[in-house]
Image 1 (cartoon, rainbow, N blue to C red):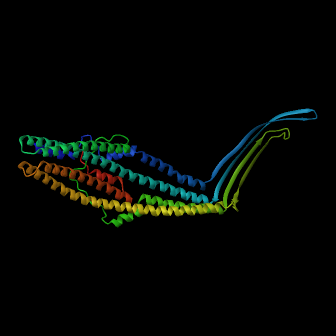
Image 2 (image 1 turned 180 degrees about the vertical axis):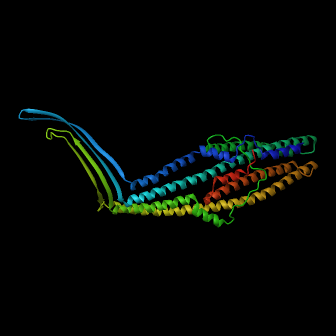
Image 3 (image 1 turned 90 degrees about the horizontal axis):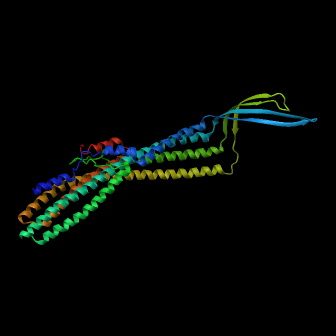
Length: 440
């Protein structure tokens, strides 16, 4: 009876699944709807997409209308005769200007297109970051839950062992030392349970921050799930992908191109400009004392307008030097982004492979720990082992199972980080991880 109880606790410690548990993809969908950084990035993308339109505006014609309406009154006297007369003046002008040669406007248009692409790259990186953050927070909660379940199962087993030690001491088959050892382990497990409960609450709060509401129970990994090595297996291929396809690197490459365009745009301050202009001016004035008969005048004008800059107080040269310095900065930022992406890919790749090796070792350790516990329990019954041996064997088994679960979680998250560093992480990758969870 006692052994069946412990076996039940072992089975329940890592497979606590509620009928209403939600899985990883459901949590991700909640994050898409409620995560504040993701919503901010979505708004930034919408703003960035307007840069192309704004840049193109400098190449398109501008049309404007100006006008005025005046009511005039006059009071004049001549040879003793006073003349009072009111008259109206109505004018308007429609003007069109089409740039023919404005190099600065062309470069601004090219910068606008690059800025739009950069905002899309930034949004893609935010999407990948969200996938990783959701997975990390999800498995952090599962890990904290595993730790709490382990502590509680260990506490239950220690409680049973403490009761057994007390009974054996009363009948004289064990010493008071066994009782004290079991009591000390029990008191320690109580303290560990409080700490585990607090850590679980913290991890749940972190997940709630992402999805905007309490997550409830989460679907755990399937028992004995098998993890696979990353493909390709060559770390250099992952690093090369990170150096070219990582969205942080792509964004910095676009920043360099924008900086190069900025140099050309500022140098255009030395170049002439040429515009096509057309206008129609209309003037309608009623009669006045000096012009008894009203007049209507229409003037149509078509032509070109040019301007040649001569001297602007060295402002253009200064802006060019500033733009060149900013281009150097952008190139340095690009190199740093490449190194960061490459390092991230290396760390994630090594983390995945080390995690797979750790999982394999812990799976073997779990089998050994189970056998060791059974042997110590049998030895305790026949008198060749003492209570502390059984308690140590129990603790080793619980710790091994907890570490095995944590190693699996870390390996999965490192796999997502590896794909994010390489710039290839997609929602489908998260769906594949979701398939590793126990069915609801």
